[in-house]
Image (cartoon, rainbow, N blue to C red; front, side, top):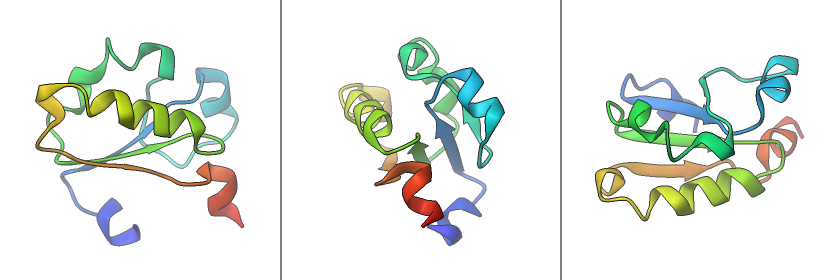
Length: 89
């Protein structure tokens, strides 16, 4: 994943609430899960979208939602299994 993150056409999207993002984050855009549909257009310039959250549940929901929208069909969508907590281990 590290090499993918370094690609200019890749974005990390943190779907946790704003207060969680402010407390600790790994960078990228903060788009809370509740706002993901209305702010999906922010992701259109990117080919690779990596979605993260605390434990992987919200990021999986967000990726499943993205898959339902035609404008996201050409994108490579990933979610961080185990979330940020799992990545720290």
